[in-house]
Amino acid sequence: MDNKKKLLMLAKRSESVRESLVNLINNGRAYSAEVSNILDDYNKILGTAKKIDSDIEAPMVSKYNPEYLAGAMGALTSAIKISAGDGTEDIETLKSEANGLKKQNSELTQSLSRLIGSDEMKPDEKFLALLPNKLRNRIIEAYISYNHGAYIATCLLCGTVMEGLIIEATEGNYSFKNLNERIAFLINQTKINPNESGKLLGIMKEYRDYSAHPTSKIFEKQNASLFINALIILTKDLHSKQ
Image (cartoon, rainbow, N blue to C red; front, side, top):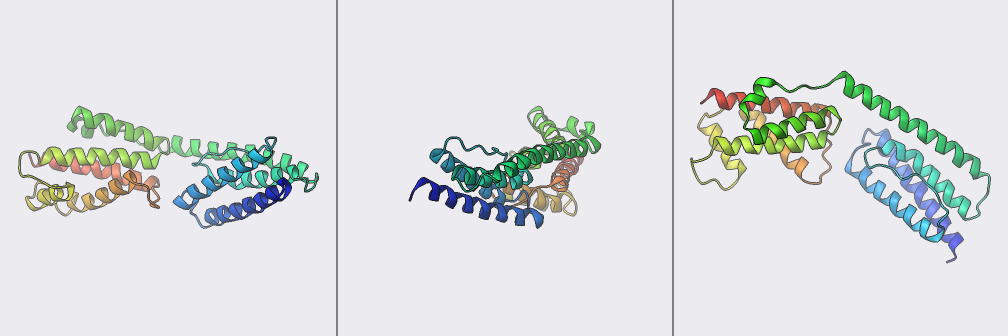
């Protein structure tokens, strides 16, 4: 297979990948695990095309901006077609798409900035005062992550704080095999309110497990906010029983 046919085949693949991405975005799954896989496919297609023709230029995009990729994939398709000699009429389209990508990326960035600026979460000082230093530093980082829209990072940090609180509250009692046994002990021994912290711990444990491992779980602002506030309730509950 000559290079022209290879590039045209890559162009068709890029169109198919782009279509899959747009479908995910339209169905509200712009930040799902499938999108991450599509972005990997995009970079593989671009890398292969560049090996055939080093002059091919297409935007390199972030895994956290899939809507930007929807346009970038079109630019890649045009770039491959031009390189393959499939018609110079695509040059103007490519230039137009490049300008559109810059505008789209700018609009997305501005929207995110407004979102963060209008709904900043500030640390609960009473909550912070109840935490040991090693956990206090982590929850402060969780607030920073939340206010910058990094909700997976927020849940991951909250998960380490939750685990630290549970371990500290169950030290010196029994020999526990895992975190679930420690949680069960706290509930059974009424070290925490079973109808409040007890139920919240189930959610927190789930969030902690999902955020620590690659899954298709989507963590959004409400998930991160719930985790932080659940930690506040748990911490104050644990100290009220002392």
